Length: 112
Image 1 (tube, rainbow, N blue to C red):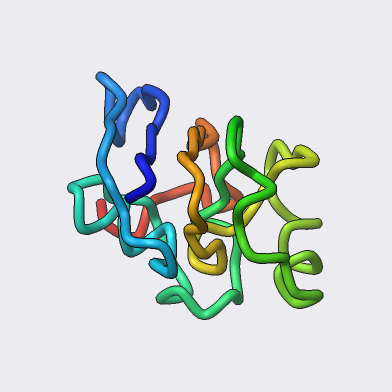
Image 2: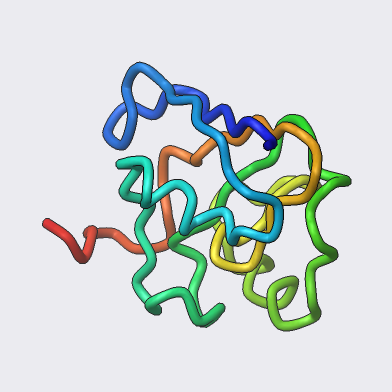
């Protein structure tokens, strides 16, 4: 089973995290199931960019981004070539290392 490494994020996981996920699992679901509360203001419907992540290792093992995701990513803060919306990224067979950007396009978290 692939290992997911989440790099340290000041608020969501200050120590970083590591967990396993079944191939075929949507990345945000795996993160949420492991206590990493990635924001998802649109309830994981690919209608915002609050769940934006940057895949530092294993990017090629994810499913290919659809046009709707790429259109939303154009609005993401800190967009990089390996950016994905975690609500659309499906875990493949390889280990992943992901970074949650410090900021989202939302000024205030829905959960606070």
